[in-house]
Image 1: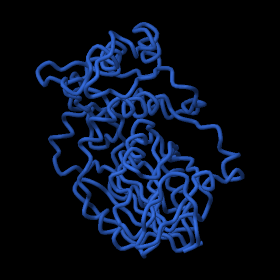
Image 2: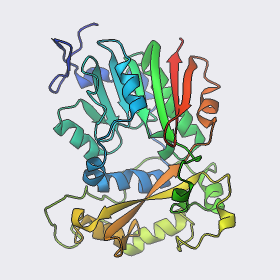
Image 3: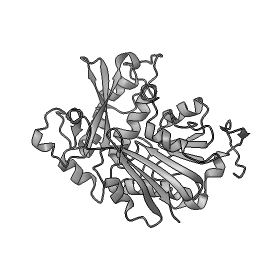
Image 4: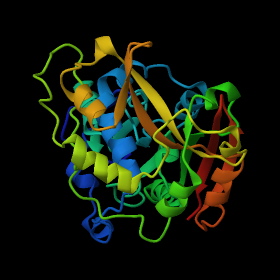
Length: 346
């Protein structure tokens, strides 16, 4: 494998130490036409901001390696460069010591955790990966695409994964399945109203990504902050924005059974941040005050809502069907996830 330089501490592969300079990953020609990011408001508010806020607690729960993902990574040839798009806390980075890994994620706090662990990682958007075309030998996207809110964005993320690997390179994608093994779990999720869906996927939905209007700091696990220190937006201003944007039922538990049809795929999935892991006087209090989270005293937790589009059987395959430069080499179900392995053909 050709020598590649690295800015941060290198990752050992076999007995050889190689360095990769992250600035070398950027191809100005590839990026120039895609500098403006179009991110629907629902992703900014109920994906990006939520994961930024819960990053330390989320990371503490993400350590087990999924067997099928582990098997895929173990099968790669020695010296392979693996790109992990949506790497979270980096639990798969460096999994195969005979390969090189580079991760990226939209959440800066999660990338901070990766770098603290010595991994090569950078902040980036899954629909606009900051790598040269034909750069990696393999790519993975584990539990990421279900956070993208439109079909075009989900397809674009797949196209990006294929773009950045060489001819013959493999791509593994996993997503949550609507055909969940525990159907009772779905009853605990909040389905999005059809009215909101119609407005949200309309022509005016994608918006130019601007600096986040609400900056929720990642919640520390021990140090207390002063009251509402991290609260950047008043209840009234954020509430007005959400009222205009969301148009969902304020009574989360008031959905009737006839609204949760068999075709329902859009949900808010709760994340329970235990009180003992949250500094109630700071970022959590700000989130509660601004309607991005709520307190559940019975469970002793601050509850955040995360957006999910859960995939139906065959949906991943349909997204790939129009791509001329890739073939499906395997597809399977794994513990309430749909999974697919692609090979780039040209």
